[in-house]
Image (cartoon, rainbow, N blue to C red; front, side, top):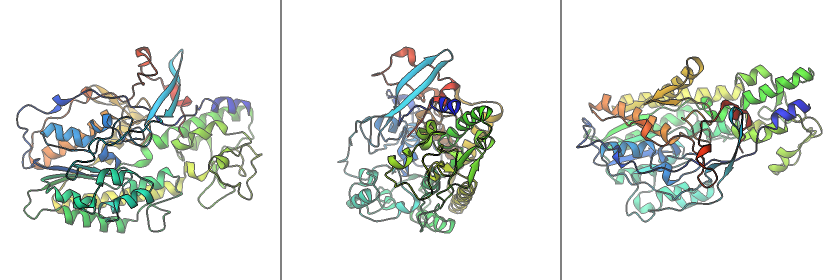
Length: 490
């Protein structure tokens, strides 16, 4: 047991990370009038959720918004594009690396913590709807819902409805605010949160009518068609490009912790063969019937969430920390004197694991949503960016031949060092958003006969830089793979 605790103790407590700021990139716009073919960017509007808003490192803040995929596209085509900018470090607690411990192989230990400061809106008095109407946390239904914005922000504990939409005089829904601008070009990327909330909660909550599953496919199709009908322009002048939903189980939020726990348990089993694996709760259970073997964990057959990693160092200990942290009375049948995670009466919590049944629910939802997106786009003459296929290709290549390179920059789905995802394990880095922007530009060029130049990804600020307030330049080095076994997140 001491071996297991020693290994798992390397999961350092952390919270959220700083994505260091960015210099002006006004040179991104191509010289002269860009050739966008039949796509007219006189008034560009972007609709969506946190991905459209350029949320990163668990926060919305100006130095990330500057490099969101929508703003990068707008710069590339010379469009006026007003966003609901938030001063750094933003709203929601931007993540920062607060401590780095160097070892013989480079950076070995990384502690991540939330920035306690809060940013504020810069242009909240702008006298029109914003061109960027991406709302972090929004689901598909939110695009047409006309609930009072302030009331919704309060009820959902999500300030961004009020931050982005502000006043019903601009329109009582996201779609109505978008149409008030009479857009000539629209990007629409929505649906991620209709499955992501279910997945990141370990299948304990959802967005369907019962609040326990992803949005059901029929409801998603009905709402997506409703949005399409509203956005369509009978004259054909307005062009729309949409995007598919990525496979949420392939992101670092789900693929980072399990293999490290699996390795630690396998080492402990060498000293104590009685250890069977990780006992975990399934939905509706108190005492665990689920058992993840070391192979299940090492291969990500079952998925542990990044938010559960702060409890990984407690595996094997007699502890009630999960219950006390969350204000949950110890349920009948739970015995916190048993080794946490290694005994069915003190199991790994359901909220921090996505088991096979839950993964099947996620896969079915993603497949259904993407089928709807593709069919609606085809029926309405929209362009489609297949982000699901693109991100999956990056992950598949990583598993076989290594990173995928864009303008000399390597990308993979590995946490911290993969460049594609920020430190919340869900949202892209600035360079990741540039990759997305280029995929939209490719579709614009193909679908509408444009010749827009692609963004040079290497000119965009890198994925992880350490806070200047806490580290000098000598620490701004590549993070070694060993760091992955010493990072935790809560």
